[in-house]
Image 1 (cartoon, one colour):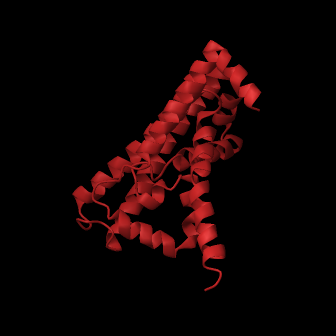
Image 2 (tube, one colour):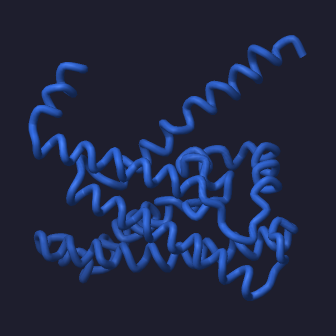
Length: 206
């Protein structure tokens, strides 16, 4: 395995793509740590610790949902939009024609996926802003300004990750969306191991 990695770095173009991908993933992790303005992140983190049913969603967002960062929605709107359009391809003849239309058709479907992703991001962020506001998790309460800031922040974060995924496709290595999803899950492994040790080893005597 190490020999394969070393040989890959000997190829100039491949080395550039690998380095580009790694640098972009660093940017993703930085974004996962930037909190959304007007949200009481500590209260939301405590709420997550009491609701284990949200662990899966927090896992695929790399913990950014628990921290309520600008990448809290992560790539989930894009994945949902992709699934919806895949299902609609069967039901709508126009989409089926585009799907069979080669590269141009795939580009058009990708464009529709982006638009639907943004729409889903707006709907999800509005629901989250109002829901958290009614629960008292917003520092300024539920107001047009506080909701607008959260919606813009979360939607922009989701759009940025979608764009980053496409940039990895073009300039990096592999499928950008899949790499971001894998990276989010892998980044949670140390914290998950620590939690398991504390729960089942350290706390076993209790």
